[in-house]
Image (tube, rainbow, N blue to C red; front, side):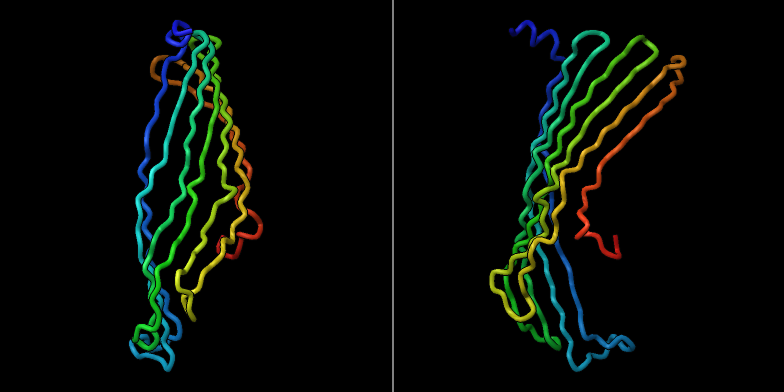
Amino acid sequence: MWWIFKKYLKSFRCGLNILSGLLGGETKLGVNALHPDVPSAYDLKTEISGNVLVFEGVAGLKYTFNERWSVATVFRTGSKIEIECDAKSYVNGVMFEKSDITFKVKQSPTSTIGALYKPNKKIKLSADFSQTWWNGFSNKITVKNPSVYLTSQPNIFDWPTLLKFRLGLERFVDESFSSLLGYAFDTPAIDKNSIDFST
């Protein structure tokens, strides 16, 4: 068994990705549009700021059957990012509310499996199939101390898993040139309820 493993398994690699999440924003309502420097009778401002570091794993495997055929696969675990933030609201320049909030984002896992076929030294044919598990993707905001202006927001996304298929052909003309031909097809990930004027 070890002899087969050593002979045909050309490469196995794994790694760790470090993801940095940074959330910051400021919203103003009731500001005088003609004279922004002059406060209106009712001036509301909210501020949010927070950051986090998370990790996700990546692993890849390649298996070579012979000089013509080889297959490979790669998988990324994805991660659940929870950014702890400070939120404040101000009315006419005076702090009115303050609370800790949690912003949840899902970095979706992905997987790909592919094959390479070389009928001769001048031609390479390749194909792969990929998936991205967007289902479960979220932008939920939870306010620990809900109040008048600082309120929790539910997840509004219901994205399905994305499927992608790719096919490629490479033909070597000589040592310096090669010609390429490819085709790719994928399914949409965004659900109809997430589409608005901006998208």
